[in-house]
Length: 424
Ligand SMILES: NC(=O)c1ccc[n+]([C@@H]2O[C@H](COP(=O)([O-])OP(=O)(O)OC[C@H]3O[C@@H](n4cnc5c(N)ncnc54)[C@H](OP(=O)(O)O)[C@@H]3O)[C@@H](O)[C@H]2O)c1
Image (cartoon, rainbow, N blue to C red; front, top):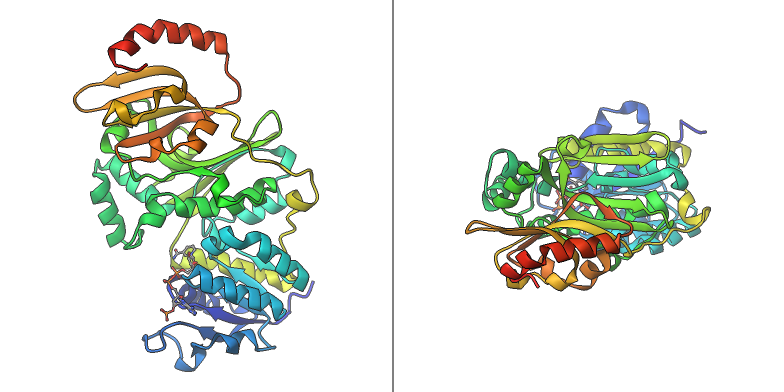
C-alpha cells in the first residue's frame, strides 16, 4: 500500500460541500493531497480562496495529466454526468456526492470506471457523514442482512420533527426548514420523496446487489401529512418518519420502498430528529445496529468526501461483491403492508384495493382507516398519493403472507359497520 501516493485533485464546485472540502483539506495536511484547480460556474462570485485556483473551463481539469482524482461536487446532475464520464475516459478516479446523477446513471458509470480500472467512490451521496456505503460493502454479507431501514432525508425529517414536537403545521415547519437552510427554496425534491428515492436506489446496490431503476421503487414523500396524522401517531405510541426500507423476505426476494411510516417511539429511528439521518441494519446474528449522524451540511458532507479521497491513497474501490460475486437478488412487490390512510373524503380511497380493513374512524376533524393492502396494488395505483389522502405504513409494516380464513371472518364481523360508513 502506497500511503505516500500523491493525490492531485481537480475539484468541480465550490458551494456548500466544495468550499467545506477546501477548508477541511487545509486542516488535514497528513493526507498529502493538493488541490490543483477548482472549476466553478460563475467566475465573478467572490470566494474565500486565491483567485488563480479557479476556472470555468472544465477541460483544464479533465485534460491535466497530473490531476489523478476528480472530485465532483456540483449541483447539476446532467453536467456532472458528462464530467464524470470524461474523467474515467481520461484515466482519473472520481469522488462524487451527486445522488441524482448516481441514481440515474450507476450501471453505465460502473462500466466506465471498470473499463478505466479507476475508482468511483460516493460515500457523501447518501446520509452524508454516516459511513453507510463502505460498511454495507465490506461488512454485511448478503445472506446476513435481514433488513435496512433508514431516515435518509434531513429536510423532511426536520419538518416532521417540528410538526410532531412543536405542533407546527406542515407549511410553517417547511418555512422554518428553508430559513435554516435545511430545505431548498424549491423543496419538491426533498418533500415529495425524490431525494430519498435517489439515495435508496444505490443503497440497494450496496445492501443487496440490486441495480434498480427508480421507476421500480414505490415511493412518496411527506407532502400530504397533516398535524392530525401526528396526533394519531402519538396515540399509537409512534412518531412519523419518512423511512426508506428494504427487507429480504423468506422467499429470498427483496421488498424495498420509500414511504412515511409510524415508527414506534422505542425504535432507534424515532431517535433521529431534526436534520439528522439514521440507519438501522438488522442482520442474522448481530441483531440491530444503528448508525446515526448528520445527513447534510458543509463539514459533515465534506468529511465523507475527505474519507473517500483518503481511501484513494490505497486505490480503494467498491467491489460490488453482492452484484457480481453472489447470487443476484430480485425485487418483489408480492407482499402485504399494514397501513394507516387518512382522507378528507371516503371517495378518495379505493376500498376494494384492501384485503381487509381492521379499523376506521370518522368525525368532523378526521377520517382514517387501518387496513392491509397488497403491495402491488400500491405500485399500480396513485389514489394514495393524491391531495387529501395521507398513507402512512404502520410500524413493522411488511406481512409476507395472510391467513385468508381469519381475514374473511373478521371482514364479515365488520361488514355491518362498514355499511354504515359506506365502506363497501
Ligand atoms: N449540501 C449538502 O449538505 C449536501 C449533502 C450531500 C450531498 N450533496 C450533494 O453535493 C453536491 C453539491 O451540493 P452543494 O450543496 O455544495 O451545492 P451548491 O452549494 O449549490 O454549490 C454548487 C456548486 O457547483 C458549481 N457548479 C454548478 N454547475 C457547474 C458546472 N456546470 N461546472 C462547474 N461548476 C458548477 C457552482 O458554481 P458557482 O459557485 O460558480 O455557482 C457551485 O460552486 C450536490 O450533488 C448535492 O446533491 C450536498
